[in-house]
Length: 112
Image (cartoon, rainbow, N blue to C red; front, top):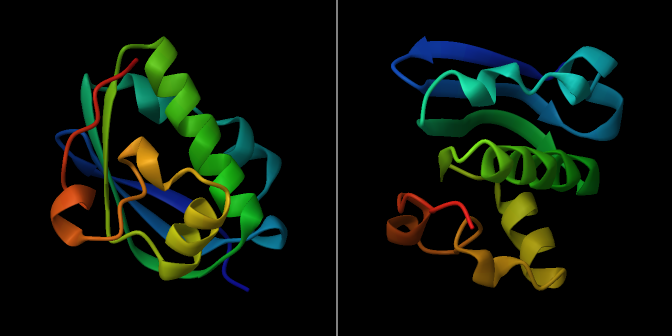
């Protein structure tokens, strides 16, 4: 298990590093939404995520919800297959954030 970290890479870009699983998340990460207020356009790169489960999907959904309330545009890249499959299973793949093809993953999603 690798603890989950959000690493600032500059200019509204963050790397999600570690596991997106329940055991890998601590209260600090789960309650930390401050990074979602650093810019109006934020890119989250999931390329360094090892394992993912439904807790990871739940955390991502909370980030989306928070970003929408703050009128922040999120872009997800390199989402793990586990998250994409769970999103599809839950019927969330039509949100645009969880599209299976790479071109759609790079699309900036407008807040509702």
